[in-house]
Amino acid sequence: MKVFKGKGVYGAVAIGNASLFKRNEVPVKRVSITDVEAEKERVDKAKEYSLKQLRDIYDKALKEVGETNAQIFEIHMMMLEDDDYNDSITSIIETQKVNAEYAVAATSDNFAEMFSLMDDSYMQARALDVRDISNRIIGNLSQEKLPSTQSENKMIVCSDDLAPSETVSLDKNSLLAFVTANGSANSHTAILARNMNIPAVIGVGIEFLSQVQDGQLMVVDGYTGEVILEPDEKTLAKYKIKQAEDNAKKKLLLELKGKDNVTIDGTKIEIFANIGSTSNIGAVLLNDASGIGLFRSEFLYLENSDYPSEDQQFLNYKKVLESMAGKKVIIRTLDIGADKQVDYFNLAKEENPALGYRAIRICLTRPGIFKTQLRALFRASVYGNLGIMFPMITSVSEIERIKKICDEVKAELKSNNIKYSDKIEIGIMIETPAAAIISDKLAPLVDFFSVGTNDLTQYTLACDRQNPILEDFCDTHHEAILRLIKFAADNAHKYGKWIGICGELAADTSLTERFLRMGIDELSVSPGFVLKVRDTVRNINLK
Amino acid sequence: MKKFVYTIKDEVGIHARPAGMLAKTAKEFESTITIEKGDKSAVATKLMAVMGLGIKCGDEVTVICEGADEEAAAAKIEEFFTANL
Image 1 (cartoon, chains in turn green, yellow):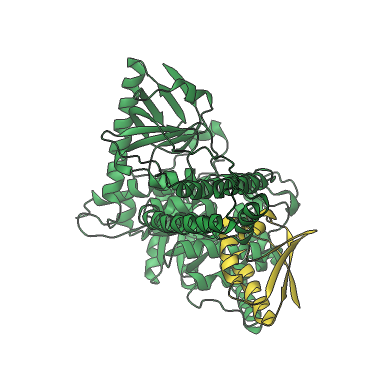
Image 2 (tube, rainbow over the protein chains, first blue to last red):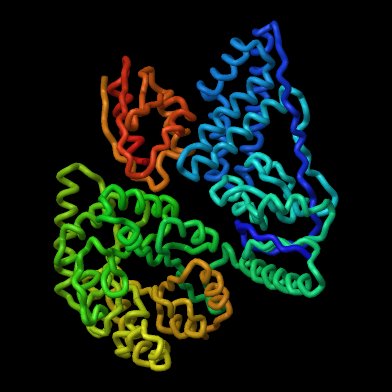
């Protein structure tokens, strides 16, 4: 038994036989020629054929991995037609009087080197794209067939590296998993594997290739990045259990995707997702959330070394709204302070940060920061279905002040002829006992409530949630909290407003029935919990 | 000649996809559209050369349009930068 470790790019376990990936790489020879025009014509023909192949691969990828990921092959087609790339091939043929294969290979080396010498890992990975298209032309020049991966049994493909086009061309019906010795998580191949739902581990090291043999039994764990050659019985049994559990979980998810969040008696509820950065959007879509119930905008501030500009924020908000294609996206304004400190805000140290200068309190006293964020939000609103949510509300006057600032921002945008949507929903977090208790006064002023159960718990129970000694005293199911939620829900509904829960309690399936009985309209949970909560909802009967 | 200066806001900078889209957009115009970063420059229609500039988030680039339709080209390319980069 030998264990190798790389980077898992798609979480799943595969157990099967190794198949070494064979590439019909034609060794390129340098041959002197006399007929330059004929050689150039050969390149044109091979290029034309390569373009046709790429178009076919693009179509296959479009079906299997979606447009965003298929675009790499559109880029390949454009690279193939790039002026500099083609001028280089032609000029090598003309000046050196050499064969087309050599001219393409030399050009490929030059361009790949240019990319691999760049100081950015993303651009370095593009060297592989150049080699991929160049090898295709060379293959077509020599009229050698590209490797076929048809095989009777499902195999684990092992290779030094796989080009994006090779990954997509692999026959999915005979592919269990793939393992590459080289490669980076940035490569398009890794991205494609993730989207094709193929367990894959990349970058296990070149040593792996000298050990693995065709037909050898192996285990690939895409979660941990472990690759095990000839596992012993105990290890094999362990992975068989892991695989079975994983499959059962995935099957459940698959069955639940596309289904309504509806109880046996027909009561419906929205299940949205919480995210903390635009990089989580993929997980939201994968888990079939019907919207985003909480987009924490803090990451824009936490990742920056200075206040994020209006444009930077705008692009991020626009990206989320566009990706969600008309589904509701609720963005919470800046929630900094207490446990989330940012240097450039220059906040003074506080004795009691949880009760201190944070969230909306910063926004209302430093309106410059607040207005920048609001302008970015309003500008982005035309790209989707936006809701804006304000944190740490305790009083009516805070909402009045917020609305006044919103009106000023809108007036500015209008006078600059900048469009914004007139359908933006405005909501507040119910995360202080005060807000819950005066929810009858707050409901008429807003479009929705969202209960932040983490803070509501710590403020209601006077229990610091960051202090582990207090864990026993921090009963998240405390009747006081549930009564406050019920009270806020009743008041929201009295004024025809909707109410959601976006704290950790929303994902607590032992409370789902209770929330449904309160008439909660939406639960917003981490993407990975969406389908679990949906499963719970579908098994509840309120009658 | 029309030119404008733009600071890249996209986290990844001008990576393959936007460079491809930029090349496509630039091909719609007769004018020569040049992207300058520091002392390096590339013609916008040349995908690999533009990628080779290694333009990252926060970089300031100058875009120069020269030709019969330079007004329209500059407007369209600026619109492209604002919307995508």
